[in-house]
Length: 278
Image (spheres, rainbow, N blue to C red):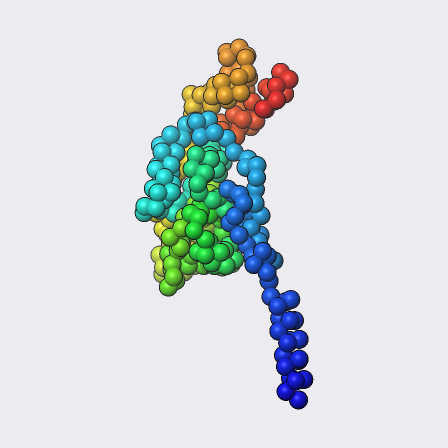
């Protein structure tokens, strides 16, 4: 009987070993400088070719650029640094700035997490906590709508909980909203609550968990044309500047905005017409 029991136990042990994930299947921060976090199953997909522009090409955002660069350099050196919320006008380089700074500080790992995967943040932080690499955790276009409780997971990660944020990770997010929630949602909660200030305090306090609030605003004509000139110089496009400026201003008016994104879209059109590859 003992011999049969041992054989049965051995079969059970073998089965458990087959079911248990191999170390090679566990998410790892090895083999790349940037990753995208996916769930079901949890995994970090390495990104070999990162889509980004040089830091020097980001014109008209000098003040916020210098603040975020200084904060990231502090973090890279192991010093104290803040989580950062980059908010404001579309197309003014919020996500481009994060990726460009990472390009200058390539000793850091950049991990992008999609907004819908925010509830999995605690599991991702466990992966980061077990690594010696210092990481920028990045969420682009972060915002929350009515009846969305996802923000509670993010609040706990930023400061709450017993463990707190791992020392080797910093969280950068971009959003078009300063408080990560639509204005009509805030006004509705104020108007229907017994105590309006307390009704929105929990959701607004999410933004307060970011030590840095960096605002990005629509650029003026001078900065817009500086962006155009910077791209012309960088890509060595030889064209009449007066003509290019006139076309670029017309291009921006047809789109109803002046921004770094609009400037680059014009440059792509110009380069295509001139037979230049970017």
